[in-house]
Amino acid sequence: MPNPRVFVTRHLPGDALDLLAEQTDVTVWPHELPPPRDELEREAARSDGVLTLLTDRIDDDILKKSPRLLVVSNMATGFDNIDLEAASRHNVLVTRTLGVLSATTAEFTIALIFAAARRIVEGDRVVRSGEWKTWGPEVLLGRDLSGATLGIIGMGGIGREVTHRALALGMRVVYFSRRSKPALERRYRMEFLGLDELCRESDFISLHAPLTTETRHVVNSRTLAIMKPTSILVNTARGALVDQGALYQALSEGRIGGAALDVTDPEPIAPNDPLFSLPNVIVTPHIASASVATRSRMARLAVQNLLEALAGRLPKHAVNREIARAWRQRVRKRGVAIRSKMMERPA
Ligand code: GLV
Image 1 (cartoon, protein in one colour):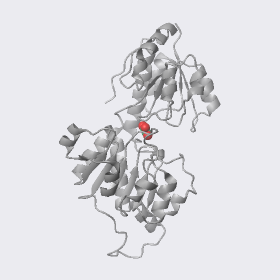
Image 2 (tube, protein in one colour):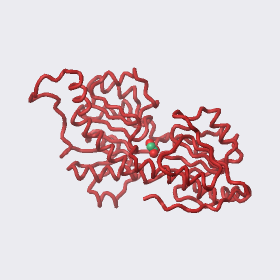
Image 3 (cartoon, protein in one colour):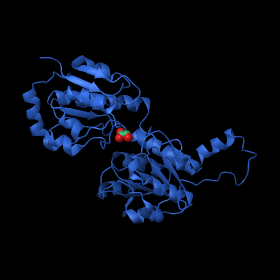
Image 4 (cartoon, protein in one colour):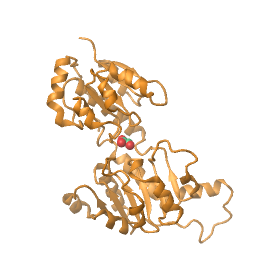
């Protein structure tokens, strides 16, 4: 039986690709930029599995043209780049790298909170440009984290890791999520609030929700209008959670205090975007999970998910588990099942 064919949309860190090459016939897109749509379409059409990144859009059209495809393994915790409903309709399994990036992303979130609160990027700019004249009692005054209220929107694994760290810094944590989490509330001494209440009460608001039709533009002109004029918005989740035009308006009119965005809509953000005219905005290039160890773990887990699926086993991080039966039948019928020497689970 020939090895299954797999397409990987970029070179990956660590040894993940070697593990994949041992058991599959793998093609890796060799360029820095993502494969253009026609290439992705061509490769997906002749593959049993694809390993995608959040920059690769897998939609109904691609899925329709890929009758061999059994699994899309997304190397991300989010999966809004994949039309999940279409994948399920075509009985294609979708997996993600849940869990392995939560701590690293939370660390970066805290870094952005500090950077915005204490005006670190602004300070660096002032020094480099020669504008710094002397130590002054009123130069670049920022805000303390200790005693401040952090409002978290979306209380999954990353939200939880941020909570843990924020509490250690002496912050009060409130959250808004699809469902309240009483066990977490008891464990972390945090409070569930309605969205509007959270916006009104928080000194910092950090987004950790997936991008869905319900969460798109959860930060909009209405919610921005009820935030404190000093509040700082932090987004390490997905750019489209924020109505960026409304954010610019609120910031430029001084209706909120600042923003630190690791994600934007679109990505990359245009270098002449009006947000860059504002000193109280920090933008980083979607790097919250970008530590050496975490990106290697993500790559390994994405490969592991792919191999497990090609071996006909339902990976722990399958998103559309409800199609498991029909999907298994497809795997069996196709007869691609590999031996899948299982790797250890990434820590
Ligand atoms: C990164 O943004 C991810 O979803 O993993």
